[in-house]
Length: 215
Ligand code: DX5
Ligand code: ZN
Image (cartoon, rainbow, N blue to C red):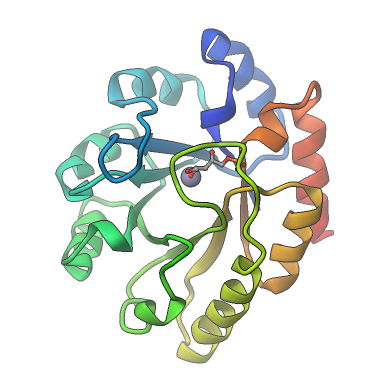
């Protein structure tokens, strides 16, 4: 599956961006919320996202790069989000937060930064619907893919398959045609791509190219 990241969209023309997006092969819209505390950048907040949600016809894949993400479960639910991803590094009581997201009626994802080993997920992998592996340090679009991330995905694939969990593996950061193939072959189910898709003169073609990796 493909989840184009809104962070690289033209914010002065979101209507046109959503027009090609709605007609593309993209499966989800990836939405990066940043707070300037958990990551050294600020993106957009709920007042903006409300308008995007109205014109987006595909499921919203919300990636919260914020401290205390549990404070915003209602806001994310009110957007109509399909999945809410929180960072392992931002949640000392991750099991409780995952339960709260489920109670709000959404799928729950846990995200790990490049320096966080997949082994920390051993006791939560049964409870989540998705694991999001960052293949760059979170906070900015257009960064270079960290090659070691492929090995993390291979290890995570083994962990998930042997545990009987149904969690999907999503990867985020520096994804293009080449790194997308590497991550798909390593066992990823969902590719997030920002600059590779929105930075292209033909973003729908880039979506089709990445979707084609599964054909
Ligand atoms: C980075 C965000 C990503 C970002 C990816 O912190 O989580 O979703 O938009 O951008 P690219 O694909 O350009 O690396
Ligand atoms: Zn993201």
